Image 1 (cartoon, rainbow, N blue to C red):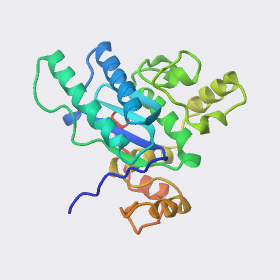
Image 2: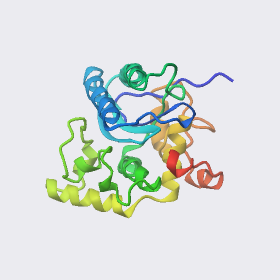
Image 3: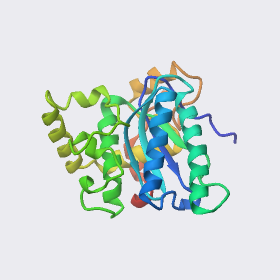
Length: 243
């Protein structure tokens, strides 16, 4: 069966996952992490992609982004991927592939999943046992949203502004949101939708998206939403250290 084209629609938030080949490490030093962030900053501006949140893990990374053009996201990921591989291979005195095929991504519904996706990203290092609290992990956008630092890579999504009327209120509300965590159903849905490429949202959202593309958006009939119950019952959630 031919694989579906990647779902990319301008103006909508996308959850992106890129993994190392065979789950191998893609970062060994602070310089490696910073190099990828610098490449993302440069190419997000070049290809008009707003990066709302990120987390860099040792063998993979996640992004939450909104591209402004149909080609912006794939162009950004291709440019970043190629240049990072050259940097990494030179630094490690190695050759060959680094990535596990093409990146995975899908469109998510803002109202239902954007803030949950941000918390999901920030909690990834906690789920993997790398840190006790999200604030302790340096390679995510959590610090930007809780007032620990200003991250030039980040363009906050308008949904974030609804967390409070002042910067302090928004920072406190976001910290509380992450501390409260997300449900197993949300976690499963966010993982599987990105890896499978099916749109994540309710029936009205998926139906609206389907009018903008001929690509099938769900595993079942077009227009049917992803079911959290089915995701949980089918145990589609990846191991927490690798999601």
